Length: 330
Image (tube, rainbow, N blue to C red; front, side, top):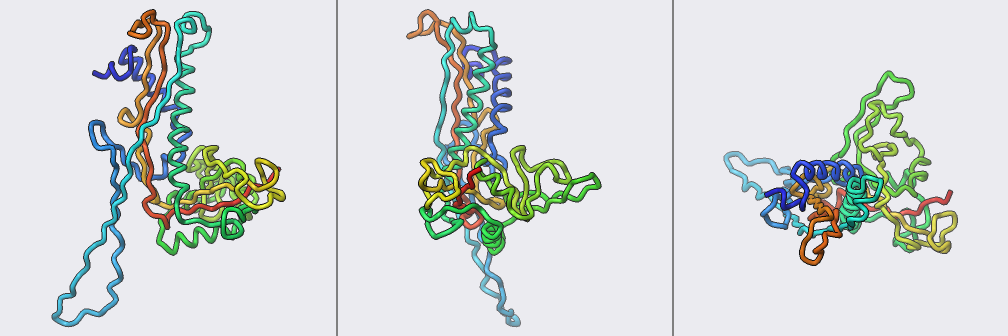
């Protein structure tokens, strides 16, 4: 029964806890919104399979009268990803529950939700940043990098996408009669660390998200757009500390070599994931103190915990790119 999943709290309270956990967690899940979702039901395999039917070669040979052509056999490519389980918990003691003036359970649910979301986002980011389609802001290897992102660098990536018929992932916003608003074309996503935000804003033609005609950014952390790329920031997109060349005017962990920031660019259907949504994807658990069990015969300890099984997989290396650049010091 459902009550056994959530520990010793009632089903009504458990349902409330789940809703609050997801409400707190979802704003941190930027990558959640742009991948092909493949939720795996309970009591099923832990291997997710994504399938792509490759484009057929063009039929440019004229047909011969009365002769049936040989036809084509579609090429199918499967991508599999095996789920891994993650989780953690915090302890609640009977003394805290009996004496603390704050709503401890609610506060613990909130911080656990943030941890869960950022853990899942980090797991997915680490998988996606390992893609093989790499561009460097300067030089040919990471240890050369010590310059910021430029419009020319962005155009190299978007041109490569277009050569591969990579589809846009965001919708176009129409112009508006409202003062100061701007139309925004459909585009690709650029996933950046906040340290890189000022360099993106400095690119010629940058449009701030607050001035979009629709007033509805693609994501609450979207900062704006440059041509057909819309940039979303996340603290999960961490740098390779001291991974680049001589720092110059760039951010550096030690003050010697430039930190290298991976910016992920992706088009439609570039990657797949198992989403952190619903009871089949995340399991919160709560056990209140004052419930004696073996090993805690006095019921002195309770806990708030979470566990999730998730993974991500790149579905098309050429529809995703990693730009390695530096970030200008302020």
